[in-house]
Picture (tube, rainbow, N blue to C red):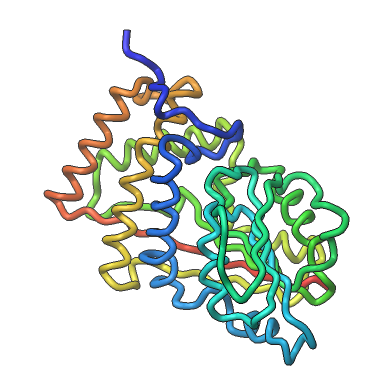
Length: 296
């Protein structure tokens, strides 16, 4: 009988987030590649200019304190450190400490801590941050978790501090020219998202949540990869190819969905999609969504 799960595909965290599996160094490399080759070329800036300006020492009267939630390898914080005032305090929080950097040499202060965003942050940190940033947390949240996560991050902020959330949804990730292999992957992924309780209408609906939870000056900005340089789609396609196996492995681990029940099914879809990319020129396109708001 075919094995449902190979041990090397096993997750190292007990959550619905499906990418903490396999080789840790490989996952760090994936996060860095996506940051420098996909997200930054797509968005150009690390954060909206008016939020960046609000972090200047002249505006605050001191160096800023900034948190990155679901920091992963800390790559976003490392880039931010290049453009913010000396003496800034940077905190990275993540449920998983394996990917966090061991040390940082910089003119700013780096602090990395393991923490679950669905639990209140330590009391001594609440109400002390000028900016809280989060990127790509949707895979780790169930529908009812969003309000909890936003509330806990809001409590980190000083009055007037900003929350910036970057994310995307499986709903809006598509291949063109059409690929039957990707459609199969997409179908079982959407089915499994519903099974585990993810909200696939997020982050598009996050703007309404920010307003409901008391944020002001809320805005949403959508970046579409089909309008970006070809290199962004090429790199994003390479990135998606690296996600096929861990994503489907998590589905097999959870009992399977329709045509994906064994690791042999995973290998088949992975090979067919690779062939479509190489022979048909299939590329991935998606919407990448920024939502931001200011604590009253």
